[in-house]
Structures are given as C-alpha cells and as structure tokens.
Length: 163
Figure: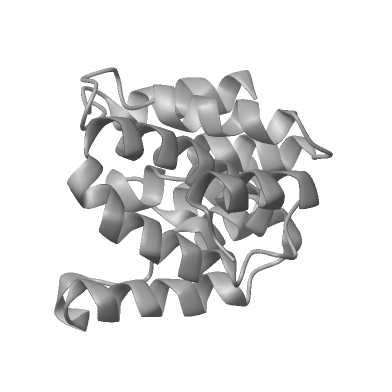
C-alpha cells in the first residue's frame, strides 16, 4: 500500500484537485480510506490509490501490472473510463463508461462507489450548477453499482438522492 501511495504521488506529480487546489493524490488516498471502512482486500486498497493513474497520467495498465500484479491491474482497468472525446458528446461518453462499469466485479464496483462518494462531496460543495448534471449522471451510474459494498451503495444513494 505504501508503494502504491508513493507510485500514485509520483504519477500525479503536480496535478491539483479542480476546486480545492490540493495535490491531486489526496483524492485517490481519500477513496482508499473510504474503501477501508468496509470489507476489502489489500488489492482493492492498492487499486483505489491507483484508480486514476491510467486515465490521468502517463502510466499504463502494463506499468500497473508489472508493479502491482494482475488483480490490481484488472481493478484499475475496470475503474478507468473507456470513452474518449471522439466518442461523442458528454451523454454518449458517460453511457459508454457506465456500460464498462456495469460488467465489472463487485470489488471494482465498491471502489467506484467510494470514488463517487468522494467526488460528489467536492462537486456539490464547490460547483452547484455543474452538480445538477453530475448528480443525474451518478444516479444513472448507481443502477450498475448495486453489486458493490452494500453500505457504500446506500451511502452513495443517500448522497445523490437516487432512487
């Protein structure tokens, strides 16, 4: 886990959180801490710390697999958005990403729930106008996350006010 935190800190480098200006790595660490609150494995915690590295840095899934093993790489792959700007408008891209999430294992869905919980807190507080769009997207995403940890699922549901 310490190795993953060091790896993520280096990979995210000088990236900052959008609304707070905090070092970006504070987000994946917070996601990992949320996962720690429920039944989890070491691989889940490592993947939580690394969940944005492939999407937001030069790190590849091959790098993750070489450093942390096939299971962590599988989880990170499941947590990485598959859509690109070429896939259409935001709604079309989010639909592709939801479909990718829908077929993931419960471990990945648990980490995704923790990510949703942490991001929702920040966006709701700092960008109320965007939160309206974001909230609708997360309500749609929750329909695919019920196989994740039940406690986190209900927490996320309560947070976004979904079904």
